[in-house]
Image (cartoon, rainbow, N blue to C red):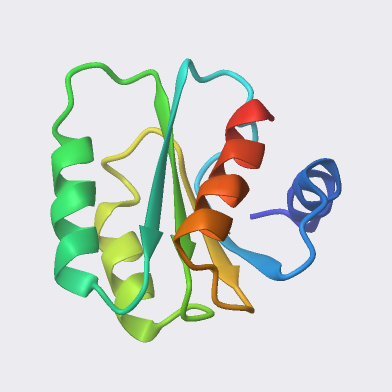
Length: 113
């Protein structure tokens, strides 16, 4: 992923406590649907969610995974497993824990972008 993409995306979203860890697309503006997937030490649940998303016949979507554990080794392994099967995948590592309401607000901000 290019540093320019990380910088531009971070500026547009005013990301402060997050790090963009992985992206398999440089342009997130061309997608009709955005799916937000929060995770915190839930490898099996994340894997099940991404497996389901990878099997969708409708392909005009992007997936944003927000890891509330910074970025765990397990999360990275799951992302690597599914990155070729999902049209657009972004992993964001939260430096601070984002509990339910704050995570909801974070994703709402991303969806508006």
